[in-house]
Length: 169
Image (cartoon, rainbow, N blue to C red; front, side):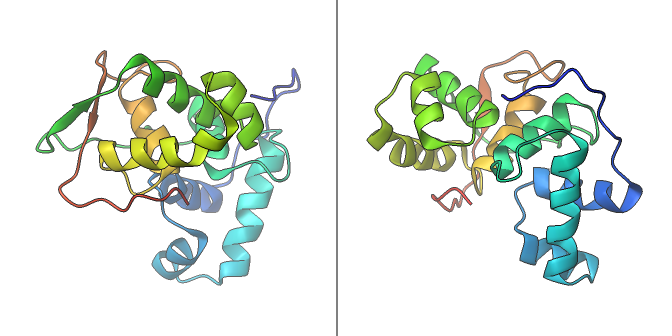
């Protein structure tokens, strides 16, 4: 994860509403619909959040979600206690951490110690196995479970939903 020693600029209340939905895996279009905003306004807020948190301009959504959660700009998303669980193995935990801390597939591959060609299919498999809608939601759950950052529950289980959409957004 790219870090800087400069203090962050806290996000605004409007950005916080958008950030809370971003961390739950919603797309800019879905957030715009929920918040009754234009997609351009949501994109502008997302861009401003990246700047406030010193994230690279083209950083991935999972990377931004991780930064928002690490800097405690939004609350960790809740987990449903009614969902069945899936246990992440060491390779999956390493991949989850790499997705949260890096944006480029090459950097994710290097950090996860997997082949570059395996980043997308293994990420899709992990998202599907966990029951997340995408890699961004998966990062939020990783924080909720204490697998990423501080706090969360002390367990290696990720929730699995009955229906899942395999691809990362």
